[in-house]
Image (cartoon, rainbow, N blue to C red; front, side, top):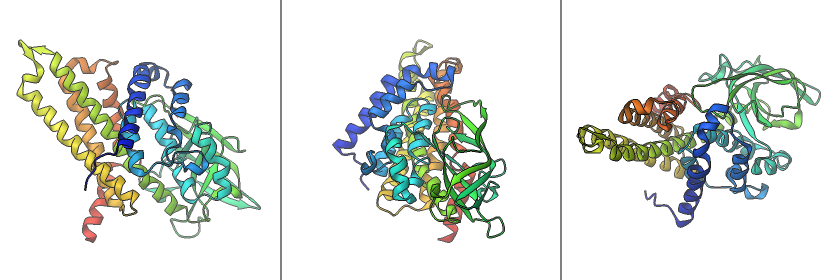
Length: 380
């Protein structure tokens, strides 16, 4: 399979790379300290169309292919995962379900504003006893008249405290089968909705995760997404389709860490010669490069299969698992190459090291990916 990029794809990646390297990365120290992304950066991202990459042109977006979206996320991964995560929550799991199964009225109401970033989106599934075990969801939606009333608490919701539209998964019949869930489009202005605790995190600064509290949260029936009781498939499809984008961000981070490491290895002197002349450092760089190249092919492969309608859950999981584990290795090796310098707080290598850790947790832990892959292998 040939993954040679077209001239248009090369231009796309170069545009996003320049924006990330020249406009976002120089302000990462500010973003880390304030745990907030400046609005002028969001405005520039909007002007580039980055909020609309998953939204069809009909509704004001650019409607990029899965491969093109992966290329964008790859470039976003070159800087702090807070900024990358803010766009990912919106253009991935925050919008995919609405684009996929929303009614025309729902799409007309929300997608044009989402395409510009005027309305930012999030996805709320996780609870205290429901993360990897999605079946453990306890949030309940009970219908009375033409309204649903949601009760429950969602935890660790990326961008949940700042989103203007949140896709929430809830049970609609606690007496029937375990996986009978529904999906709702919830606005923070709805009665009974409030933001609870906003968590401080070790990485992904600038895009905080939050607790969302639903206390008889009143949701109009027209804001149910898809048929009642069929939200399980929508939730799983949304998570699956977001995983190649996680892999792409990991790939971009690996590439940037290799750039930083090779520059450092050339310039840093020890025992009268550059670090890069030592075989031990060359071996580290070789292993970093090999894992990164493998992650690239797995990521692009899953994106191409998604565009052709041939993507399987195990293919997605292989890409997400390998790329996130590769980033863990590359970030650790990059810090080791820099030694004490890499351990200084403002060093970007340390930031990547902290940011990398969550990629083996969110949108399906490494253990869940292995379960999916292992079961698929046994079925063969």
